[in-house]
Length: 310
Image (cartoon, rainbow, N blue to C red; front, side, top):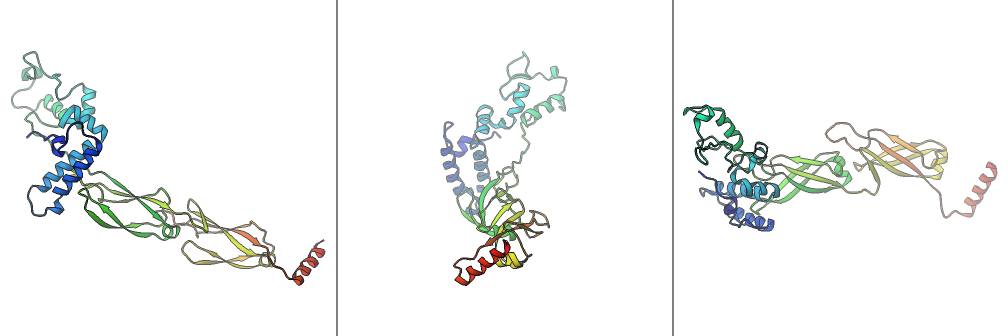
C-alpha cells in the first residue's frame, strides 16, 4: 500500500510554515490520542501516522529530504552516494523507460539476485513492493530544573507538570540524585515523545541549575566558606562551629595565634561526587573579627598590650 502523504496526514499545504505544522499536529493529536479515545478502533494507528508526519516535517533537514524523495526520504544519503533515487533509471535498459530486463542483470524469475539486495538497501523494500518496518524512537525532551545547594547535596524529588503531544497535562515525579551541578543532565528513561512503528518512547532529560548559596562557594565537588572567629579565640585558641551543606554544623578547633585568612581543610565534608560514594572537601577560611564599641578600660588594656609588644 502506498504511504499517505505527510502533508495530507496533517491537513496542510506543502508550503506550510513551522507554526502551521505545530498547530495542525497539536489539533490532530488532541483528537486522536489513544488515552482520550479509549475503545475506539483505529485511533492509535491514526495517532502514530500523525506523530510520524510531525516528526519529519517539523525537522527542517528531514523535511527537505521528504520534499525531494517522498516516502524514501530516510535513504536520501544513500541516494546521494549511489546516484540513485526513486525516479532514477540507473538500473533500466534501453528496452523502455522504467523497465528492468532481468536477463541483463544475471538473475531469473526465482529472484535472490544481487539486484534484489541493491534494491532493498537503497529503497528499503523488496521488488514486490513490501516495505520492511522501520521502528523510530520518539524524540528526547529537555526540562529545566532549579535546585538549592542543599538539595544538590542531599538529592531531591520534583513533581513536574508536563504536556503530552495531545496537549493533555500530566504529572510526573522525578528524582534528582545527590551531587548534581549546574549543567548536569539527569535522564528519565521513556518519558519523552511517542515513537513510531513500534519504536520506543524518547527520554526526558532534566537540565539542572544549582542556585547560588549565601554561605558556600562551590568549585567542582569542593566547597569554600568563610568562618568568623573572635579576635580573642584567634589569639588564645578556641572553637567555632562551621555550617555544612547538609544543614548541620561541625566543630572546628582554632589553635592559638591563628592568622586572619588561614584556611582549614575539612576532608570529605564537601559535595557528593555524582554517581559515586565519595565526597569533596570543605575549605574553611578564617575571618578574624575585631571587637567594636570598646569601653575605656578595654582600650587601656589594649594600649598596655601594645606597649608590652613594643
